[in-house]
Image (cartoon, rainbow, N blue to C red; front, top):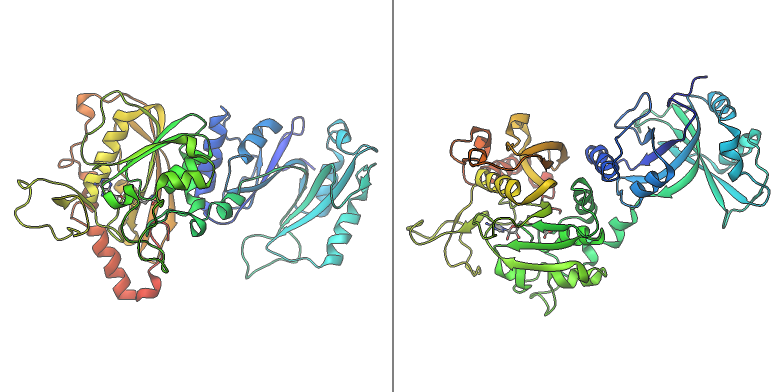
Length: 465
Ligand SMILES: C[S@@+](CC[C@H](N)C(=O)[O-])C[C@H]1O[C@@H](n2cnc3c(N)ncnc32)[C@H](O)[C@@H]1O
């Protein structure tokens, strides 16, 4: 049987991916490959939504590098055989070059075979029967369940429909385990156990995905203009980047004011972003954060960041505002918050937030540097033309996270490919692409109108909740 994943002469690798955040997986793996200068080369019959991907053209070192970063991939295997039935798997395995197998099957080494089934639970006896059936492979070493030198895995794919599980698997794979991904980070960095959190702290898994989409790497300088409690900086510092940020809110930057924890009224003395990095052992990566309005040009020209990664305010749990002067406003704006230290503030339209963010990124990213940010969407009206573009930034990926039946947000990744000229400055007023976001807090109005129509149950978390 011709191997469904393509060539046999060089190794193929099988990625087992988590079945959540489906949209985010391909851009993550592509970004991590491109960090190592490798293109994404899927095997034949690649299915993006499948939990199993065969990849060509990689070395074990590349695969280990990807797995050391990925939060979307669970495990990676050197693929020894594959088929649509166990018979086909056997034919495929027997055709695998023996010289590639033998280093792992030696007499003086121990091994274990795991059985993994996707979308079906096998009884213990069936697992044992599957393992016994692999006896046609020339294993010479002894079995060690506790600490084997080599781990192999038989993986069976029963499709993705839990209401329609077939008797026999659609695909079976056998391979040598190479590495696990970084799913553990989702638990160990959970905001539930984080020192300093706020109402809009970004969930750990998504923060790491954003850092990966941005291709953040060791010694990079990363900036978050809407830093909040610094969740994105925490993720970037884990990957060895130096991090800094700004926020308009004095209390957030200085870790003062009311606590977001239910059992605590005021923030404690050391509840701030620096303490969050300290909690995870990355304080050395902390550059600084400061109170600043993202709509104002406060940075000197020529200051460049390797990545800009941010979660702008949508006005759901926080107002979208910017600093103003008494000239700009004759009466206190509706969304003025009494606790704020900003003396005068005015509406900051979503359209302006995105235009400013793209312009800022075009000026302050290194060439090839990436901007990664969230765009809120009122789903019934979404079309691709709504995605903000910039003449100096190439759109790399656009991934949806559904929040409710009528709202979602899209994670946009853009890469700088050109230095901005005078003519490239986006004009907020003339740029029609942003029109869905023109009215102040129009997304907010639609968000809540949908909630009211459908009842509060559907109010799914936005901004990481
Ligand atoms: C969605 S939150 C960011 C949450 C952050 N990612 C975290 O994990 O905590 C948006 C932040 O933008 C800030 N913000 C709102 N308007 C701003 C402005 N004009 N300039 C800078 N920051 C602003 C808000 O104070 C809020 O902290």
